[in-house]
Image (cartoon, rainbow, N blue to C red; front, side, top):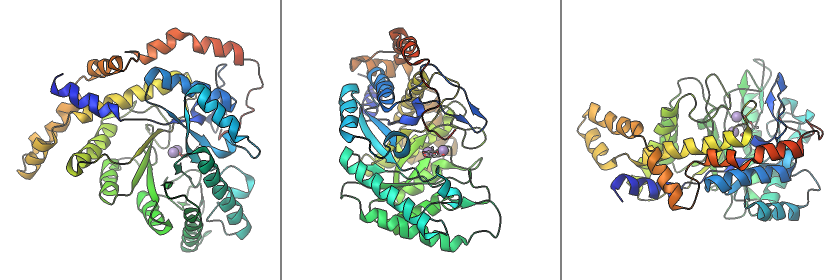
Length: 394
Ligand code: RM4
Ligand code: MN
Ligand code: MN
């Protein structure tokens, strides 16, 4: 095997990507949903669809679950375990939902009303319990908390409530578990968001306790923000817990990873790989997709995303770190930059295909999935049942 093949095989060998259960259901924009006959509407269907992505790509062994949508009160967890073994996909991160119910109009853990804060806290604690029972490591809350008009919120007081809530959640964690704190600058709140950026998430994670980390959703940044610098800083603070992968043109668009700016994702991977090269250790980062495909076939879009992530990760694996570091130290700017560009511009697809074949996987997972006829079959089986029954954010 030549050096490039070795680098790519070893990088892809340990690169796993979690899938979001909500990416298989009918979701939409705030203007409406476009329904697909083959979309999943039950937890069993979501596990089945995720199982398809995993069986064709071989790298997606876990499924992120949203508590309200997937694990409503009374859900028999043995049934979840049964689906998990039937479809070969384990429950992944547990995502509390403290943004959908009426009470959360003015926020959850940062709400002015003690009874709403208590309700949100109970829900997140229940999520921790579910995670323990399902053997999930990460609890990943995202907070819609914020306000729409200047002067209407005591920002410092709300920050303190957020700290108090997260500390209590942290106390409930088992030793191996982690609390991942996701940030987002705006939407649904349009004046201030209580957890608006990585600095706020970092401070909250630090205040919560040693098992808390920051979660970076690639779509949750302002235009032109240097996400790889954020990643580098979080890595250097040992505070990067995980990613939600997607792409964006304008805001939190949930477009397919790499569809708009593949170099951005590559640069993120380049920072991670460089840090791993320096420390000689794999960074403990949970990679996950957070995309809802309103127009594309959901399973195909998920496979396309996984293939894109693998290609960009494989490109980053080709970076010559030692030579790059030397060029940096010698201030040879063009050489240093070209170490990135050369890796990025390499067509890694033949080597990625070769890696798949060496694992007994389909060389082209998208094509293999299409040829399986799964979409046509599920469209027939699932069409006609009550649509829109599944709750979602659309
Ligand atoms: C948010 C955020 C969360 C996701 C919700 C549905 O914008 O990305 O991770 O759980 O959407
Ligand atoms: Mn997200
Ligand atoms: Mn989002």
